[in-house]
Amino acid sequence: MPSEIMMPRLGWDMERGVLGQWLKQDGEHVEAGEMLFTVESDKATQEVEALDSGTLYIPPDSPPPGSDIAVGTL
Image (cartoon, rainbow, N blue to C red):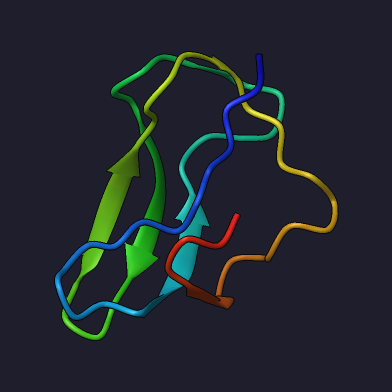
């Protein structure tokens, strides 16, 4: 069953974040706990870990790195 990846809230006042880069590639196997992508907020850049194991699928219409994304957005 697919798991959706959403922009996480990394601080109490965070409303948006910038997708920095994917640390895993489309089609690559990912284990829960592995670092998946980076998020740049107004305060810091943080790595975000995978919550589930499986194969990463990044849809063609997903936001590219550098996109400003609202917290909770897929």
